[in-house]
Length: 342
Image (tube, rainbow, N blue to C red; front, side):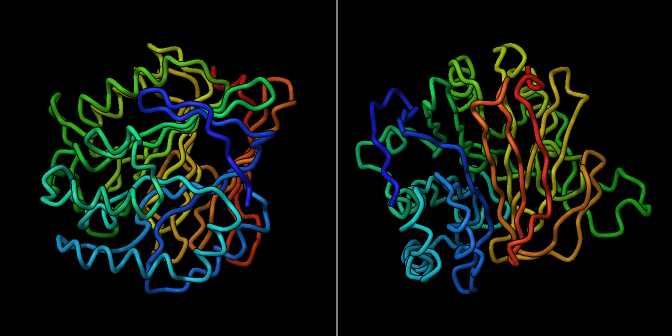
């Protein structure tokens, strides 16, 4: 097993030192009662880290004894054990492992489910993550004199209820399916909550050469009637503005939730291009990909995982974003030089 040497813990940010960290795998949406053979493929790519982005189990309950059993079944699966033995793991959650489908701050057992989540992912008992509401956190790695920052958001604990679709859009060929939610246009709509926003600003003010923001729901996609940041456009705009005001270079997003993969790129945000690579489907699949004018290339519907390869020695630092499917075939590939994200 690769070892991480913990240097120090400051507020809600953990700093690690490794000889190198060049390859990061990630994914989401893994049902405890379904095979996850793709987890046996991931170690062959020799990632230095794996990030679970939510729906790490499907519990959908307010019965904590049942939730514990669900996590126990997941942890006993041989493919999960194989990944855990070969690769350090960090994680955030989404709705099904938080508590219930599409739920936010009104979930009545969020404190209890938080402790079960943190115990499953071996969070130290003295961690600052255990001391504040929610599970947001960040990790900082120093590699060859450069800094990698990974920020994991909590999109559940503080989020307002979604707005049921109000019928304001005309039914046309763009949405040949049922729309569930409408964008919330009020200025006080909350997704992250003020405590998490304050913390995030502090994190983005820290020096870093590459910044990965992990969001359980898609960040840089267009409205599609399902759950996403697009349902909170004021919050979405606030994050674009925060990247600008903090002068945080090198930010790109990874996300999950939708049971397919796609790479989105937005150039209409008032900052540098914002990329969002969605990897959602370690065991789950969906029937179709929703409209997304920011998508680059095609959506991947088969089970898959994401891979980030960082070339620290390249001028400006090169980051390659990839999606690999369950047959170990490369399906999405995008090279980004960090000079583009300034």
